[in-house]
Length: 67
Ligand SMILES: [Zn+2]
Image (cartoon, rainbow, N blue to C red; front, side):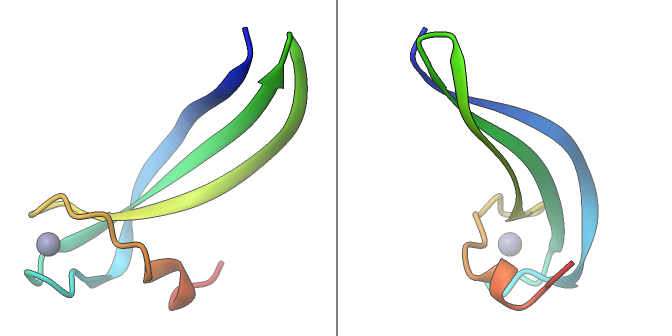
């Protein structure tokens, strides 16, 4: 199998509110792994932000919130 695997590590509530509808923001921690013929090439964890009310992906959110 070659490709990209993603595993959701957890979801937590993020501070702030959705710029579109004002709803709550959820931070989803995702572990992404690129696999090339059974060899894991790289592993990185990232955090995605999305609105819990309108389900929009908040792409610019990580620029505002840092760990
Ligand atoms: Zn929203």
